[in-house]
Length: 242
Image (cartoon, rainbow, N blue to C red; front, side, top):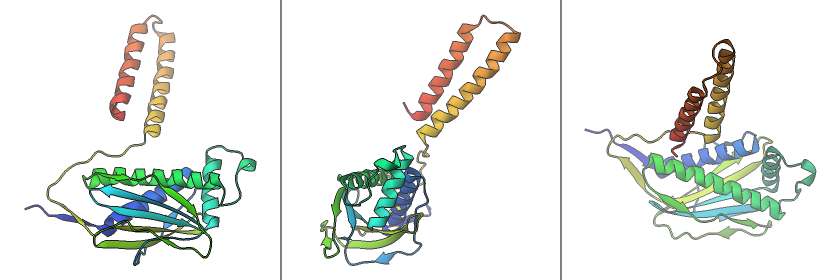
């Protein structure tokens, strides 16, 4: 008999936490971490100073909210822009700036893209997301979002930036379980940029070796060199799935 594996709502939340930490850490060239404890809450809310949310639907429905303090939003925004090569003198200083909201919204989009990609492979289901919405909120305002979930499970997880600024992920989804009935293999993830860099290095090394060899032996073998390059290009396209 098959030893069934059960994936719960909290397991799915953990995958989302990993996506948040991974995307924000890699895009800002810093260290973003999440707490090891999760808090059960009655419902999700948009809170000060900068709130971002997106609704997803498909194999299961849910809602993702990230509430940034002004200091956390500015730190992530500035680190992201500096990592992209923008001059520091041209960066915004207030979390109410449209540019800060646009960057946070783009990062939210990348987070959900990473999360959906993992869910599609590991749970063999399909979900789609709405365009993330941003809202700058003052101290007196808290907004609840009704996603019309059946028997909803709501959780809150705290995150910490490299400069110890706190922000919160709030997550709600249908109470559900995924049960593995049979063994399956899903495609391993790879980074296209790393793969291209690897092939460039290999190609450069082979090119250097062939140049030295041609000086010692024959200079007249263009057909063999062209054939080798074509094979390397075909191997790279195969690995990229093109």
